[in-house]
Structures are given as C-alpha cells and as structure tokens.
Length: 130
Image 1 (spheres, rainbow, N blue to C red):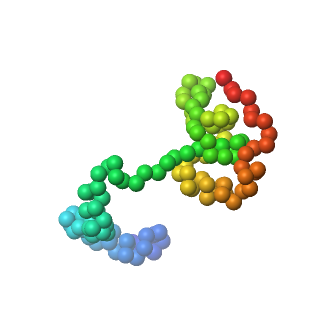
Image 2 (image 1 turned 60 degrees about the horizontal axis):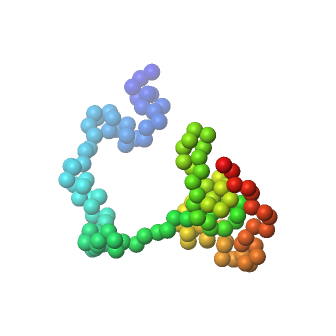
Image 3 (image 1 turned 90 degrees about the vertical axis):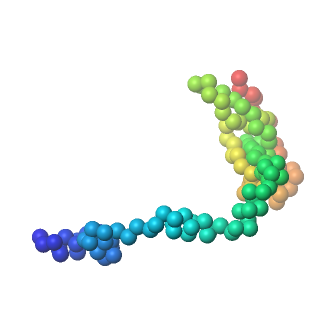
C-alpha cells in the first residue's frame, strides 16, 4: 500500500487528514478562547446574578410522588439490607417513588386533570415494614 491509499481508507475527514499530514494543528490562543466563551453570557444577567444575595434567589421545592398512593406525599426514610438510608413514601413506606419539582410531577402525572375521587388510592394502604 502506498501512503495515498492509507489516507483514502482512513475514517478521518479530508481536513483532518490534511492537518495530520502537515503535522501542525491550529491552536487557539487561550485568551481568545476564554473571551469567546465569556461572550456567550449576557453581561447584564451575569452582573445581576452576582449582585443578588443567596437568600433572594428563587428556590424550588423537591417533593415525592408515590406510585402506590398515587399522590404527592412527604418523604420518609427506610433502611436497606446493608443499613443504608433510602428515600421511601412517608405514608405507606413504598419504594416505588419519583422525586422532582412539585410543578413537574404535577404536570407529568396529570394530577390537576384527575377528579378528586381518583387522586387517592381506594385500596387499603400496605402495612408498614419494619
């Protein structure tokens, strides 16, 4: 095989092959690279975030949706066989839970669209495990 045949059989693009063949790669100056990354952010927004106190920043409430109770519940903590803590449903101790923002869980599981009678599970809750 000749050198030209090896380049044609390569998976590299033509520009990559040309760069590899010359032995030179164009490197961006570090200051230029940092300036280009910083120009992505809006200066006014960055300044307002820096000046805002941490207590004034918006917060989100993380909550638990139990697939057995079919409602948003408080979190409980159970133990695994190895003694590690695990988040469980605070009502029925079920491990079948989803955690997330309250608004997102409400929207994903369509909790606002259900009639009130369907929001709660009609079966008896499972006994608590010890």
